Amino acid sequence: VCSNEFTYTKQAVTTITTQPVTPTTPICKDATATALNVVATGEGTLTYQWYSNTTNNNTGGSLITGANTATYTPPTTATGTTYYYAVVTGSCGVTTSTVAKVDVLTPPEVTQTVSTTTTLCPTATSNVVSFANYVTPAVGTTLRWYATPTATASSTVAPTINTNVTTRTTATAYVRAINNNGCTSGLVTVTLTVNDTTPPTFNAPSALNIVCNSTTATT
Image: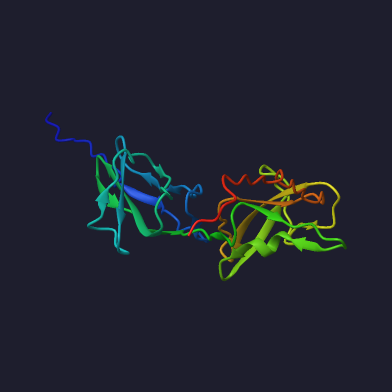
C-alpha cells in the first residue's frame, strides 16, 4: 500500500502587536526620556533594530548602533525633533513599526544682572532688598528660589536682605527658571553682602619738613 501523506505546518508571520508610542509631553534637554517599546510575535528568534529619522517616515532612517532590543530609550543631549521606528525580523518575514516622534526642548536660562557676589552699602534705616533685583528670567518663565543648592522645596517669592545692619552681613540664595513645558534651567547662585557700619579711618601723613639750602636769592 502506497501512501502520499505529508505534514503541513503553518508558521506565524512576523507581526508587531504593540507599536512604539509618541511621548505625550516634550522632553527637556538632558532629562531622561520615556523608553520606546515594541511587542512582536513570529516564528524563530526575533531580532530588533531601531532607526532614527529626521522626517516622519519609517523608511530611509539611520541605523542606531547598539539599539537591537525591543526597548529603546532616545538620547536627550541634543534639542530638536527626531522620529524613531523599529524593524523586527523573524523566520517568517520582516516587519516595520510605526513612527514615534520625540521632541527635545531647550531649557530656559537665568541671566544675572550683576556678578555672582554683590556688595551693598549699609543704611541708617530699614531697607529691604529683594534677590530678584539681581537676576532676569527669560520671557515665559517663572523663577523658583531655593534655600540650599540641594533643596527640593522652592518658592516663587524671592528672599530678601535688610541693609540696616551693624555688622557685615552675607546671605545666599539659589534660583532656577521653569518654563511652561516644565523644563528648568541650571541652578544660579546669588550672594548679597551688606558691608558693616564701621566708619573709615584716615591716617594723616607726618608733617612735611622743608629744608632750604640757601637763603640768598639768585638772579
